[in-house]
Length: 112
Length: 114
Image 1 (tube, each protein chain N blue to C red):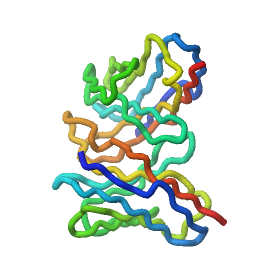
Image 2 (spheres, rainbow over the protein chains, first blue to last red):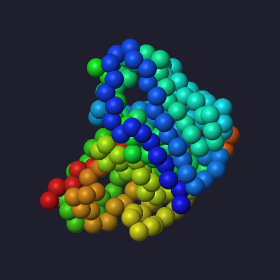
Image 3 (cartoon, rainbow over the protein chains, first blue to last red):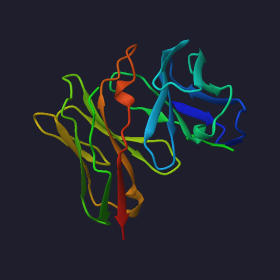
């Protein structure tokens, strides 16, 4: 069966510090991968998606970046965090073509 | 990308049937309609997907009229644990194309009371 792992579950970082969130998928190959952010009481904002290794599309310009160094690994990064980067970050995968999407457990990031 | 419109919130009581309607007036021919459920501090979970008419699974039913410009998620006999945010998504997730189908709106916050 397929599983998605996302870590860490919670993170408190000072303003200006770097960020690296990792997401890995097991049990499938060539998944579409997504990063979302959800601010408190808000909807899900799509940040990045990837349809293959090294292929990253950005939905919203910001100080975040994403990379896909391996088929089932998706990394969200920042060189310098802002207060506004606080939120609940979710990684997701699917097989495309109207298939069900599966989400990780999320990372609660608080920038202080 | 078809935009969706849902009520921001709904209230109901345990044991009642709840219907949440989503409008998607500019749905494209190839678009499917998908509903997700999200509990606080968790990722969304797939509920049901359909293209036309009616789809039913162990959790819910999805009603889609002939013009496909709207859809209704029906939850039978809700319980307190059905309190969550429900998202309606419309689009095609094309391999190598893009992520249009996974663009979430604000969803409907359903509150079930005893």
